[in-house]
Image 1 (cartoon, rainbow, N blue to C red):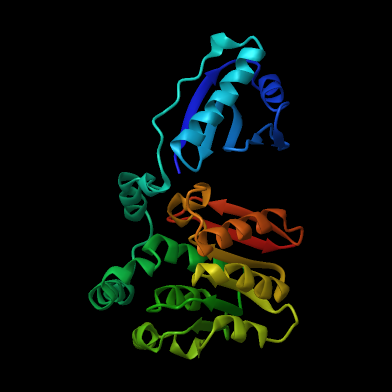
Image 2 (image 1 turned 90 degrees about the vertical axis):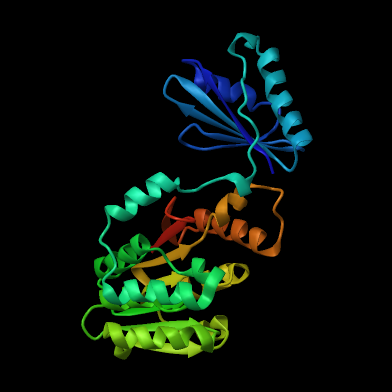
Length: 310
């Protein structure tokens, strides 16, 4: 899908948004932002200082051009031709970089570095899993998981998706005295590496590994809200199922962290319609509208959503 942007300088952004929104289905937010749905695609209008940012998206370039012409037509009918719209070159999701490499390097250099155990695990994972090594959480995200676990004083945590165990170590290290981590995965091969490094990290006695479909493990848990923290980083199609089973069992004030919620930018690209793209879009919308929680989506790595139970 191509995405294109334009900036409009005007002190009357709010009134202009209302005018542009009159001829289409529109979702107006309290902060003045508007999402307009056209048959060919979408347009997002964002008031920004003394101007307006316009973001258009569609399934292909022809549809994108139709959306842009619809917006330009609205400006003409409003007698605001002088504003003009100069669109950026269309960019598809596979060309987007959620984190610029320069910023990425700076972030890593200014975060607590992995210790020798985690550093060795990074190397081992890269050697053994090859291209799959990208499934391992980054060191800065690992530090964040430890912090979050400590901040909620977690005694009982759940992890869906273990891989080679990096995130498990980070969560287990943050647990309160006597705390336990229920770790769910389906791979004996990858979790064999995890078990070794859990022992090296001195946290193996805090982790209960369950091999099998995570949804079955979650559904078998007691119904009472006793989970303090959960981390979901597994098959994306099942994210909505994992979320619902966990949120029912999350105690008030407890946290859920969901990784990869941006899918490399593909969640905003209607050209991507595979099952996992659609599942993630549904989940992101569900969480945003879920009155049981308060939530924030962070542009950390491939997108990290934090959800707190009210």
